[in-house]
Structure formats: C-alpha cells, structure tokens
Image 1 (spheres, one colour):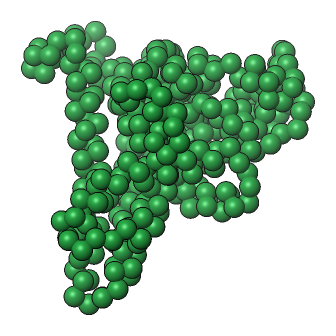
Image 2 (tube, one colour):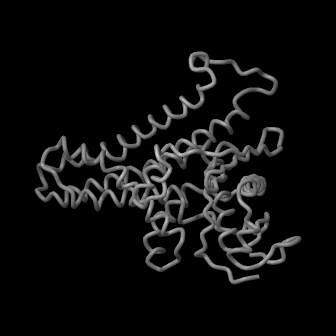
Image 3 (cartoon, helix red, strand yellow):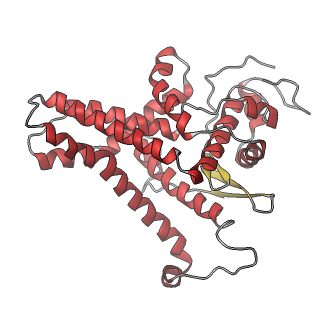
Length: 324
C-alpha cells in the first residue's frame, strides 16, 4: 500500500447521537442507530442548507456561520430520529401531543428550528453575555481596556471549559461520548489510509482536529482577539458588538479548523493542541459494537475504497492485509 499520512482530508464529518452515529458527505447524510433488539438501523437522506443562497456556504469567512447553523439543525434532526427507537415501550403506540396536533406533519421541522434557536440564544447568553457582565465588576479597579477585554476572554474560556467538564460528568452523556470517539476513529482510519475494518478503526485515534469541540474552543479564543482590538465606549454598544460579531467570529474559526483538518504543519499542530486536549473530555474509547455502527454510517454515504484509489493510488480487494 501507499505511504500513510496524517494530513489527508476525506471531507466527511459526523456527530454522535443516541446509541448511534450520523455521518455526512456533501449534501448526503446517514444515521446509523443500534436498535434495542441489537440490530443496526440505517437511514440516509439529503440535507439542504439553511442559507438563502447555497453559494454563501462556499465563500470563505462567510460559510462558517451557515455551516455552524446547518450542523445544529441537522444534529437536532438526527437526535430526534435516534431517540424514536428508545422513547416508547415495544408495541406501544406513540400519542400525539398538542404541538403535533396543531402543526401536523410540519411539527418535527418547526420544533427542530425552535430548539436550535433556543440553543443559540442560551449559548450566546452563557458564553458571550455572562462573561461580559462579570468582567464589568473589574471596571472600578482596572483602567486598561485591553486588560479588561483579556479578563473577559479568560472568563469566557473558563465558563466554556467548565460547561464541557460538567457535561462530561453526566452518566447519560458517557455513551454519547463513546460514539463520538467511534466517529473520530473511523475518519482517522480512512484519512490515514487504513482499510475501514473493525480492527483498524479500534486502533485509530479518538481525537480529530476537525472536531466540533475544537471549533467551539477556537470561537472562544478568536473572540478574545476580536474584542481586544474592537473597542466602543458605550456599554450597550459593547454588548451589541459582541452579539453582532458572532457570525464573523464563527467564520474565522471555521476557516482555522478547516485548515487544521487539511494540514499537518507544526504550527497547525500547535494551535490545534488545546482543542485536541479538550477532546479528552468529549470523547471516550468506544466498544466494538459502537464502531460497527460508525462503519455502517460511513459506508452509507462515502465510498472509502474509491477515496483510497484516488488519494493513495491503490485498489482495495478482499480482506484487509495492512493493519495498524
């Protein structure tokens, strides 16, 4: 086989869901879920961006904000699908609530957008607004606006890390984080040029530079730089600027993490290191059953054998003969 490299980019991404994995390749996505009876259910579909014009998702520094919202919408949709296998007892008919009765067949779609909107509002309040108001307590003691902006940024990062730590301690989240690890392992296995089988995936790393955890940490770090240099006198305008600049910050952070996924340069490895460290909290080692689910999700949307032929220059025939 060809030379293995850590710098290849396959273009697929994913997300852990309840007892399963979502994998996305361009507009096509698949959700593979381990059913209560032990079987694996795979659903494939296409996802259309929420951007009013699709071209916006291809323009550097603009596409990041739309891709972030897209990932939230798709993530909620896939979580809803996976939860359906575990909501009710076998044979029990699901009763329609008032929301479903009012909105009919559009209920799930409307609920998804409402949930995403609520999540965005809560994230802005927790990670942008709260650090700003806490930092204002230091205004009577610190005259330097640069130092105040730095304190605000440190508070923002600490709140985010505290949130991640708190979530990681929840018992119900642990299996989701194990599936998160399985997702990363599959992508790492493919991008390093090893055949996608159970043994190779289990030996691959559970951390990846394009992870959403790393993206959120980049958002926190980039915001520190932005708010050190962008200054306004009015407290109301300062708060407004922090909210209005979120799409810009997300756009810059997206370009950084996109570059990180395509390069193995030492500088890229250095700036990716904090996010990779944080993934120790948001990923756990999966078991073989979880990896099997992840492989099913990958193969439903991505022809990894053709990718190997195009990227590494070899065909994959028969059982794997090159293992980690």
